[in-house]
Length: 250
Length: 178
Length: 78
Image (cartoon, rainbow over all chains, first blue to last red; front, side, top):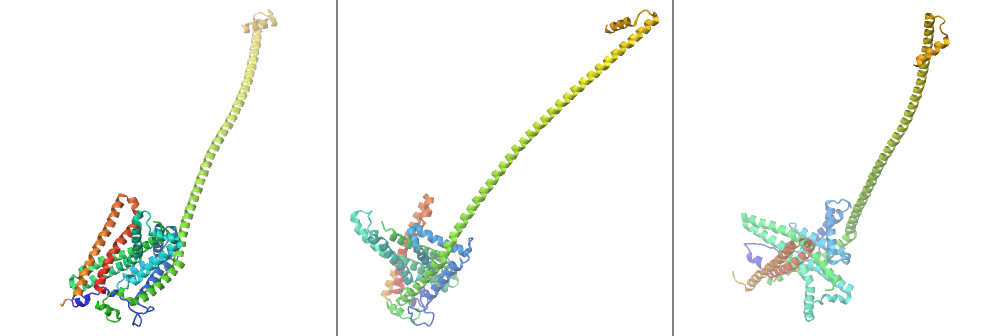
């Protein structure tokens, strides 16, 4: 394909960095194989433990740096849930915080050179999004019974339009996990692929490589921003969906 | 296209398809993701989040406590200042009272002393008056006597036996009263 | 180079798909610009609406990401 055609000119493989490899023994990847994705998920756990457990071990009244970061994240997510989903949403605080911290730490770890970005894989983000989707749907029916369907019946619209709107609402409801997952994976993947493409240019340009390297620096800065924002967006959308489940009145 | 078949075969060097769409790795990723999330959830919900919550609550409590303490200290200081001011005012009024009392005492003493002194002076003056009177009387008597004796002598010298002592005395007394 | 009409179609399709990203850019710009206009008119209310801003940006951006994904699929997966 593209790379084979380019052959001797630009030899860029922007997608190679996302490849999943078995780290021990090689061979086909079974469900239990220890892959680079596993490794970097493990690093994510390690980072979270360092930040949130080791960092707060002193329980200081006047916090150290890591402790105040941990407290800031706690307060940030706590406030977000309370603002968006209300007081009842706070029951799900640990779960939402887990999602947030996992995505945030994975995104940032993925920005280290030669690392592997677990959140760039649709399998991972789709799993996260499906978990949210299923949990929210089940919760909605459990809490409100059939009244949860009122979410699709826009009672403020004229009666003739309501069935049409119901269909649209239904479709948009089921598109949620798709956009929820692809937004995250796509953003992360796009940034990494762009950096890789620029890096490929730099390899082929000789002295003029300075230009793509500057661009890489700029894109990298943007990616740092995106890594944080996407974690934030994923979390706040989770809160929005949770709010729909808790208060489905339209 | 053609290379999906290539990409599906693992080991073909750097399969050019999207690794994200290589479904053979999905079970692996999903499995490890679930493991990761469960571990993270357990760590967070059992250790990290309760700890941060207690720290935040403690800090809130400590701040509240400090504020309360500061409030109390402020009140104590206020009380102390009030007490001080009151004591000062008391002392001041007491002092003025003492001063007034002392003044009154002194005035009384002074009046008494003045009265006593006046009385003494009056007594002494009366005594002196009397003494002066006595002296004057005795002086007058002596003058009369001297005058009589002198008169009798003069009369005897001029005309012996011309007059008796009684008439001379009467004449001298009338002259002295003159 | 001998032609391969399917490959030609892939490349053209991928390039066309990238136009969608421009649409997303317009969308994100509209969201952010209108937020800024509103925020400057009533700055005291702006702080409470940043969450809404980010949700709006995320929805607008998702569609651009979809088109990017289509381009990627055409380039690498079809």
